[in-house]
Image 1 (tube, helix red, strand yellow):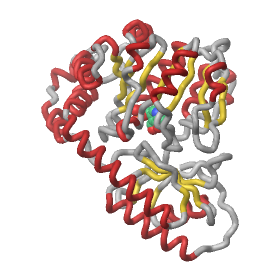
Image 2 (cartoon, helix red, strand yellow):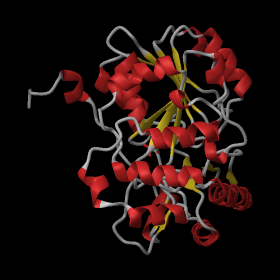
Image 3 (cartoon, rainbow, N blue to C red):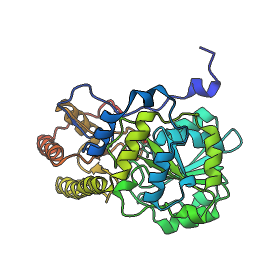
Length: 360
Ligand SMILES: Cc1ncc(COP(=O)(O)O)c(C=O)c1O
C-alpha cells in the first residue's frame, strides 16, 4: 500500500463481464458474436510461419491499414491499428486528457470511460441522457478536451444520427471520439465525418461484428495528422503478428461479415418481439444486444434465476439500469433457450425480496 498514485489507489477498476469456464452454458452477457470468425481466419492461423513469429510485427500494421482503408473509403494514413478498441480508448485518454483537460460523455454508457478518466486523473463531465437516449444538448458546451459518444450506445443500443454528431463535431473545440464498437449492427456509421472534421476519431472493434473478441483487434479512423499524434502515444508494437494477419483476413472477407451480421440483426428483431410479448419494454436496438426493462418483476431476480439455469445475461445494479437486463443477441437456439427460461421464470412469479446485485 502507498506505492500507487492516489487516483489509482482509489479507483475500483473496470469489471469485465463474467466468463464462465463451462462451455455448456448460454452466454449472452458480453456481446460477443454468436458466430465464429470468417473461415479465412482459420486458414491464415494455420499458415502463420515461425519466421513471422520470430520477428517483431510491422509496428503500424500496413497490410491491415490498406485493407481497412479500402473498406471504409478513407486513406491508408487515416487508420491506426489497436490492440482492441479499448487500446484506442487508453491511447486517446493519454493523448488528450489530464488534470486540466477533462473528458465529457453522456451517461449511462460504456463504464470503461469513467475508469480511464480516473486512471488518467482527469475530470469526467458526465451528462445524463434523457429517457429516450437523445444526444444531450449540454455536451456541446462542456469545453472538454475530449468528448466521447458511444454510437450505438452501450448498454441502451440507441443510435444518434450522423447529422446530430456532425453538428456536435462542429461546435466542439476539443476532440470528438465516436465509439463505433457496435456499428457493424447499425444501418449507418460516421466514418465519412473524418473528411470534414480534423477533430473526429472513429473507434472500430473486430470483437463484435467480426467475431474476434479473443484476438484483440480494433482500429482508429481519423485525419492523418491526428493519427500521427496518436501513434506517438501507442506502444511501439501494440498489435502482434498473429492478430494482424487474422484481422486482415477477417476484414477482407466482407461477404462472410455481411452474412453473419445480417443474421444477428434478424435475430435481434425476433428476440425483441418475443421479449415484448413476455411483457418486457425493449427499445429498438442498433447493436448486437437489447436492453430489456422488466415492468412487473425485479430484473435482479430474473438475472439470478437465469444464472441458476446457466443462462448468462448482464445486470447493472446502478440507477437507471437496475430494472433492466442487457441481453446479447445469440444464435436462434440460444435465444430460444432464453425465451423458454424467461417464460418459466415469469410464470412462477415469485415475490421474494431484491437480490444482492452482481454486475457479472
Ligand atoms: C462500447 C464499447 N467500446 C469499446 C469496446 C472495446 O472493444 P474491444 O476492446 O474488444 O475491441 C467495447 C467492448 O465491449 C465496448 O462495449
